[in-house]
Image 1 (cartoon, rainbow, N blue to C red):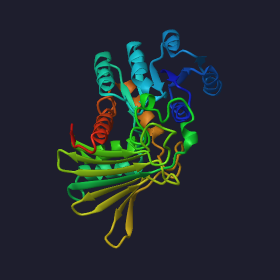
Image 2 (cartoon, helix red, strand yellow):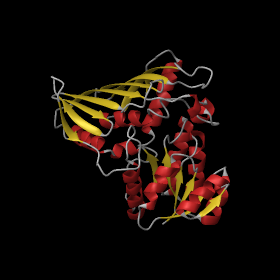
Image 3 (cartoon, rainbow, N blue to C red):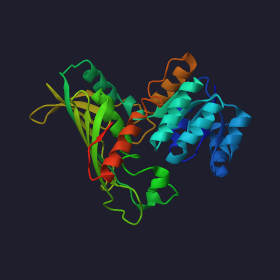
Image 4 (cartoon, one colour):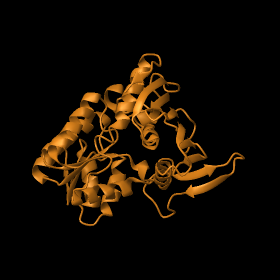
Length: 336
């Protein structure tokens, strides 16, 4: 299977490392508006370098395309790739507007091709085990979820032409760093969201970015589960993400990729932890790229629908858009 890459920045390395491990998958080309970056990728992984992704699609006719570009380009590039007959695996978020999301979903249906959204933390060992325990009600019904993302991003992180800019990134901590946790929260809840309330602030980079670095969100789900998410990039370090799952008979704590059952006295029984041989991701956001990308190509080969497509992957988009609307209206409850 011939694969092409659009966008050769930092996150593309995780995609390239995963692709290099797959049998029957070959990188035929890479494109970047900075041609030297595409050339560097091709020098290491093979293929031809392009400065224009549309030219690449036309000349190379790849079977699949990975999109690793700024948020505002995801939808238009995905639509072009689907129109060219390619499967599409896209970095999060799937879109930064509801119109963009619906356009991508419609294009997926009409194209008959696979679309994947990269929510790799679903593949972490602890998340897989937590989902299993919740689905089987091993500890009874899920009642509530509490999640915290405490990371650090300084002014240097926003020195490019899109991070921290509303028009291009679509938002701040909620759409970029905390979106993985937001996705896991709704995934674990196991029910459509009913409403969202949110508050946002820029606590430590005023005058540097025009988006939020801190967000507080309350989400109510149709099955009665209530979730609270607190996220910031104004912390001093990149701490492991913590998700507490309060069930009828246990508190399950997902810290990074490790899942534990926490007892009343504070002691904990580890239920799942990362593979000691797993590599390819930073400790605070997991190592799931390889697992998810391998699963995407299995689905591309067999025709089985990839589970985290534009519809499933779009649920987080619907949530953060509702949260931003709520924040703009002083925490008003927004129905979904």
